Length: 453
Image (cartoon, rainbow, N blue to C red):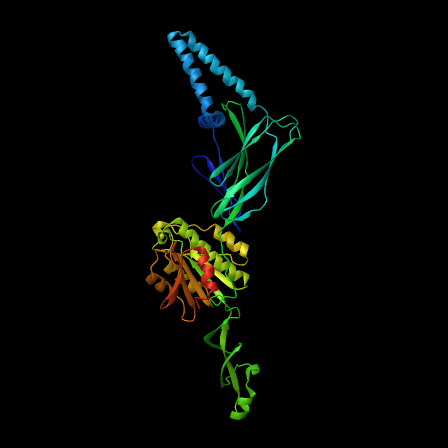
């Protein structure tokens, strides 16, 4: 079915068939003066766009030194016209000549092929990585010297490309420092060609961007230590189930029970069917809740130590083949902190994926407190056997106890407080044990001597 509607202003609205989707076309008829006015507006718009584009191209090409020459040319000519100063014409002519001599350096196209390859894209904080830069002149003519800018994180690496004949290559080895944890963005690369005096320059940008993951520093935790990480075979809970490994008791048979669980000796003695009951055995499943609230840490270095602690615990658990869940608060807009609760989980399928996720973690004030993160972790994660609540020195033991209450009684909860320079120790506070880590290596020593059993 088609519909057609006409208005008193000469606009015709035509609709296509209405089955499925409706598409409406608007056709406008212009006559007389209105058509000429519309054509004039379009012409003005095209001129304005052309002028804007030309001005942007000029402003991007002329450097501050070039603008100084432009101002000198205008000022010299104005002084010569206004007061008849011959020196003004000399100054204006000299500045204009210098500008004109710089223009040929901008002529021609960029015909470079640029390649930047890293020896690895993942490093540990404090390490360095190498990169191989290759610039090739793919054009038919020699390429003038140029400057290649490579943004690396918040810094900038400048590589000078010499004069290259057609088909020639320039290779250079770069060293990139990764002093702290994070994700370093490399690119987009920009090559600039201009005159030797830096008066004018024309840039060409390659949009490719690469990422380098700087992992947190970790320490090994012995899997054979007599600590919290030793229950590889699972832990027995108080939950009674019909099928498992840990025998609990014998009860009367009820319709629906599997005949496989019938205890025939008891059945022969009592004269009625009896079945076995078992205690549920859960495989070790660990949750690590990391506090991202910057106000809970005395310094940025203390927060980094907390991240390294959480990463060390998770890394050893993954290597031991255990299930690990890492949670933290998602970023919440400040105006919605009291109304929105949200957590995020990091990938833990592989050690590399987990460390990549740890590299991107950032502290903030616009996050939930650890108590709410623990509560949501308890709701969203089932069958936990142990939980680590990792936070800073500003977190009180009372608040850690409040966070630990969110987990059931058969879950072992350990509060880990990163406190730089503090004496390593473990103390019990009712619902949980609190471990104080003064240095990252304290974590390994505490686990090794089995002080948290």
